Image 1: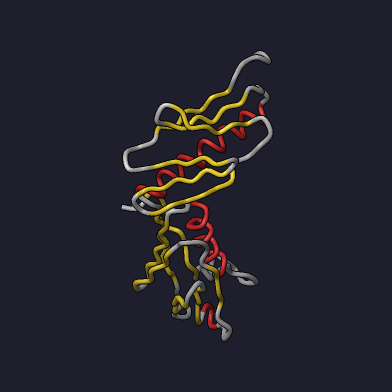
Image 2: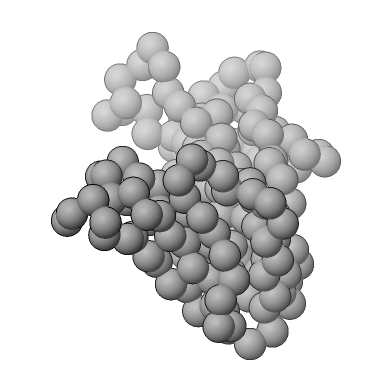
Length: 181
C-alpha cells in the first residue's frame, strides 16, 4: 500500500434497521431495540452513504486499518443485535453438592457451590436477560458485549480454587453461543 491508498469497509443496512450518525456516536435502531456506541478515532471516519455505512480512513497504517475493521465489526454486531439478538447458553454441573442458581434483579446468586455457606454472586450487565430452567441458564440480549460479559461473569463466579479441578468439576459452563433463534 502506498501513502495515498484509502481504507474502506462497507456495511449494508438490512430492511427495518435505521442507523444514525451524530458526531462520533453511532445509533442503530431495529425491531428489537436501539443500541448506541461512541466510535471516534483520529483519522477514521464513519459515514452513511448509499443506503449503507462506510468506515474509512485516508491513512494506510496497519494500526489504523485494524481500527477501521474493528469499527465495522462493532456496527455489524449492533445490526445483528437489533434484528435477531444474541444468546449464550450455560449448563449447571455438580457432583458433590447440589447447586442452586437464582436471579434477583441484576444479580445472579449461586448457592451451595462446593458446600460453601456464602453464596457466590455475579452481575447481569446492560439489557441482558437471564433465564434459569433447571440446570440450563440462558443469557439473551441485543448488546453482544453485555451478553457475553454476563455469561462470563456467571462462569467465573463458579471458578474452583484451592482444589484439584480434575476431581471437582462442579460449576456453570458455557455450552453454546450465537445469534438468538
